[in-house]
Image 1 (cartoon, helix red, strand yellow):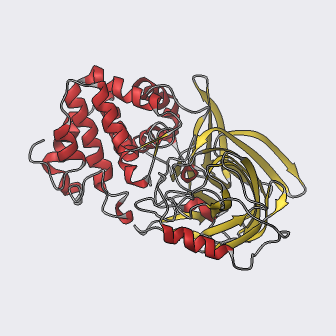
Image 2 (image 1 turned 120 degrees about the horizontal axis):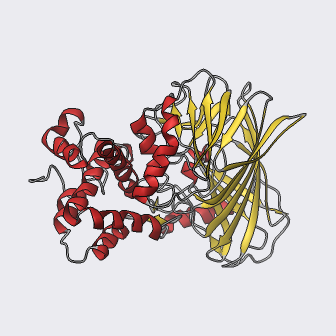
Image 3 (image 1 turned 60 degrees about the horizontal axis):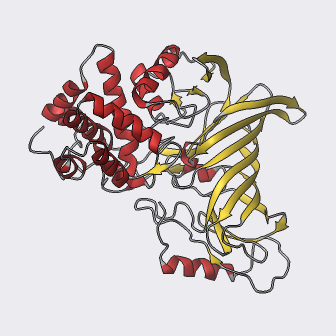
Length: 468
């Protein structure tokens, strides 16, 4: 299982402005006239309207953390470098739980206020549109585990010997403050100190590991843009393996005592992925294999997918395909989830076909004929319009999403199909895209074909299409 900015309604801005008139939780010196208006609290995502914030764009997160599994205590300082996209008198960060001790903006103490998941910061004198600024938030406490609308758990998940952070869709706000919506991607430095003898595994490349009086510190760097929901941190007793896939560094962490035989095929799958989807978009790859009780699902955490227990080859293919579809080409809003899951599921079909098993068309035909037996909700709603937040990871998003991809391949033929797939990952590399972007791109690449029936019946249509 793998889990856009619009105008903010006037009442949200009004509530934010009213909150700022209250006595601030943080320190700050007296101010005269403050330029600008508050940024929006939420970007009105159709499924998670409170997620993300308006008025600024984050370029980089610098997270300096310390975690003790014995007490489940996390302390940290989050450095957030961002650019104001409007004149700002205040801006919001998403943070659920944890205690905020101090906030500074450009080195000056800033007033702050908390309501629900909103940490509202009032910088001294405000910020000008186009201004790049750095905010620092010092915080600590016991991180929370969130229960999603579909009943699954995300956020900070305790494990037998540590914890794992899984953020899809909104769980990353349980361990660091930020602009937690996939439309705002950034680079990351994540530095984590844990007790000696434990590993702290995150995204990107391990730049430095050193032991001191406070424990062992691991410094991770992610240069390519990353959505916060695929940021991760795994702390525990892991066996570390370093290798290469061609020229690409491979870093895997496997919970001590777990077997992960499928990881031996990771280099082969990476080569296959590049042949089918285009150049790999990141500077390293790998995996984290935790215990079977650590989580209820795997997740495409960037560079390093997480698996609860040893994955089989199909699941490994699925999560590695997400590095192209979801991690590099990231949905503009959660409504566009099928672009992640439809392509990753279709990658499983392609792998099966290329391994000498059923063709993708065979899989499609079987699903159409008797898919309800295995996937009872297959025709419950169209993939491009999930029926609520609780259904973002349901069968139509995955299986019917993959069927849309196969219908495109059926229509245009293999040569044009692979041109479309590789062109799509290149055109939106490290960016965001939505369903309209995709359908327009397909039509531009195959202008002589008529896709109306595919969009109307398979992508947006209610119920089972009348013909396969």
